[in-house]
Length: 368
Image 1 (cartoon, one colour):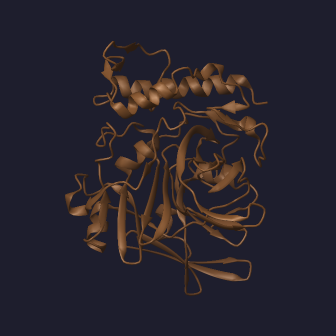
Image 2: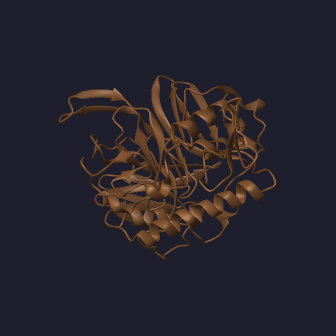
Image 3: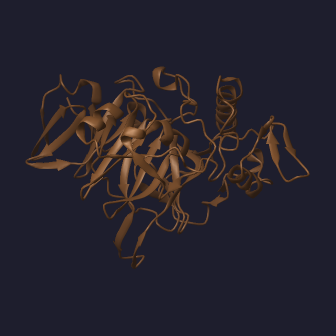
């Protein structure tokens, strides 16, 4: 079993970090339930309203709070993390490495079929980054300013059911196909809807599917515990672009709306300068020091390997790279990264180096 010292320490650090941001930050008055500290001052008023440290919960936040009212993080045992039972179901990871984050199950609410608006109406700054995805003539942009508060968007674009995912702790931005097909041992095809489990694995977001409640490591797109263990989602091609780049590329793009039904300050980044330093909120098994731990990688799944390309160095590295009998080619034009196998474009995604290296010890290679 994992050393309880690490579990308690990681939980304490996470809560102190989030509470520090939310209660002492200039705009840190929202998202209380999403990162609920159970030592906070909670008042349940006679009129049915609930206040946490003076902040009145919205109806949706109150619903989350009441659903987990009797849940105490310190009393949850290793086998039933955030109400997910992992001891009596298949698993392909050491489940003792699953950590309770600082949120409850669905405490960070994923969005399903959210509202969109013309990107010209989006209030973000022009250098705001977001995930750009297009299919069958339909283009959508999912800005980090919203993704950081919800982490998973279950959407349908041009007839394709997708999961737009982002883990702020690992910088891992990936778009997945939510359709799982032809699983012999399961005997069915289905569209999955993903939520945030409140758990972490190697500091990475652990998703869960709302159909069977299997647990999925976001950076791998793989079910690691539960009925769907071993199933891997297909990575779909997308680009990480600024608002300005999207408008130049396709001014008809629709942007994810801030009208989500949740009370969040979408102009405020709750993780402070986390991206810009080498410190971690939660521990990982090890850190490969070949690169700065939070250096952004563009990762391409290819055959049985995962290829990491240092994103900021693409203009300076060799454009051709040999993998087995194949010669791949990479280019970056107007912010868009494309990797080719002959004339075929290979889908990829983004991830911090420390996360890539810990998840791909045996099947990861670096483009040089």
